[in-house]
Amino acid sequence: MSIQWSLVLFTALTGLAGWMYACIATDEFLCKTKQTAFKAALVALVVAIVGGVASVTHLAHPENMLNVLGHPTAGIFVEALLTGLMCLCGIVYLVLVKREAGAGARKAFAVLAAAIGIILSFAAGYSYMMASIPAWNTILLPFAYMGSAIPAGVAAYLMVAALQKEEADALKPYGMFLLVGGLIAALTILVYMCLAGLGQIGLGIVAVILGGLAPAACGLMITRKPEKASTYAVVALICAFAGVLCVRCAMWLVFDKAINLFGLTI
Amino acid sequence: MSHYALVIDLDRCIGCHSCEIACKNENGVALGSYWNKVLQVGPVGTYPDLHEYFLPSQCMQCENAPCVHVCPTGASYRDAETNIVLIEKAKCIGCQYCMMACPYGVRSWNTEEKVVEKCTLCRQLTSVGEVPACVGACCGNARYYGDLDDPTSDASKALAAADSASIHSMPDVGGNAPATKCILSSKIATWKVSDLA
Image (spheres, rainbow over the protein chains, first blue to last red):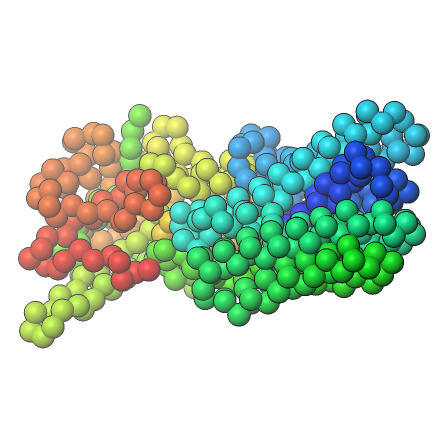
């Protein structure tokens, strides 16, 4: 089966946006990078919308999409709903920040957007769990989807924060977030690729390095040399996003049905 | 509820592909696509103990159909009257998730209409009391269509006449429970579908 780029981009971009909201929500409590909130939320919203549009390009007949209301339990509907809700919460959060609303309301919508975004990054992988495709039918897949999205989202947030010229020391906690996120990404990708994707082990190793270890190293450097955070954030974002793409491409390349009587490929 | 499905007597199937051609003619299935395809299983064994059989394959009418569960719009659905899994093309968004979820890879992508298709057990014929085209065209009288809950149907009679050890179905893949049955007695060949993966 060929790589479905529309779906690769959808899951990569919405996952990145979801974990950016996680950083925004974190900062609502840490209050370290307050100047970043609006622009980071704006970037996350745009990225999520672009991801949503990418998913629609996969459909041959998007005009029939309203029929999803008749079958609201399917994975695609859940993903569409979560994407919509995340964007809605993100828009409300932007309005609240712009109007300098109370901290409670800001916290509430930032946490909501983050929670939905994190769930979405998991659900995007969970939808592919099908008994007909053994390499996909493992809970390790959604964990790899979610894990690989963490450093991408955190690196994107760090990049926006660095561009906003936040104080160097204020970025240290997010450097640590990137370090931990990168290690989680490396672990989840490695475990999935080892147990389910041996057919694409080369791409899996690249995904582990780019998607996990490289961003983790950048995170470590940010905690030690926060004055160079912008450089490390850019490197981490490029590596993490490449890793996100690699793990999703590998998933499509290990596609193999348990039984394929017609021998047709999609 | 009725449970309409096919019963295929592989002891009688000669692998002539008539069912495949009749299906294509009746349903206008494009070149390179299938709603029904005859597979050759084997030969297996060691000379002189060799055996093979022909396996006509199509939608297995799963009782717990994964294609229906994953379809976001309800385009893949189960007909309330006959229990047959069908596709309402007007609702299909072309996401192809049903093709991924089908345990047997027996759905096809219509490149012209950009929708998913599959065997409908010739609803256009069976809804007016006729048999599916593949059943009508089978020169070996190997295919039977009918309500598996009705003991007087052709399909039920064929099953009742067969030795229970000779009745097979495709492997269950995660609880989908395929309803289509095959009859293959050990004197003809050993049921062996693991090679089809």
